[in-house]
Length: 184
Image 1: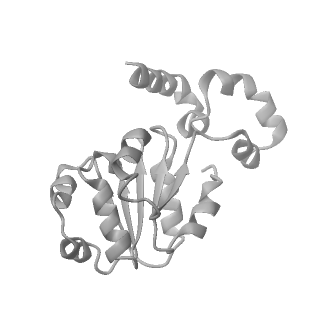
Image 2: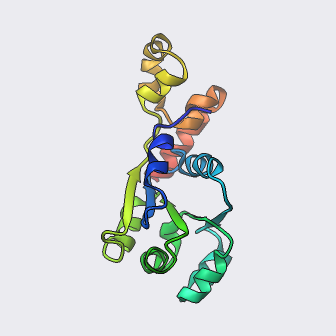
């Protein structure tokens, strides 16, 4: 597993009474990053996926009491694909204002949509981070400078998405899938 720089940065912003929002393209490693960060922290973590209908239904018109009951016993709440949840901005606002002892981390691959849904209600209540595909520096830390310089042409053609780099035999298929998903 290639270490991401945000792995060391984000924990410094946790438990400060603000939501943490992590934006980035699909397959850049947001969920993996959050799992690595939360695994290092003592206490239970509740993971919710905004793609799941049951999660969306439960959070629809959620009150402070309902949300507090949902996270009772947990120190961290992660909402993956948060942009898919209606009224996510107000839900995150309730957590930061009324349940500040629970650290909320929300991820979204549709950064524009998630930022639109959270910008007004979370003004002053959030820390935002962008996670891009692997940087040259992250790759050098994982291998070495000579290896990465030798791989530069391949990286320029195929990119540096984690799956492209870590599973080379799938790289062509992965790049084609990502490109067709984004373009079409």
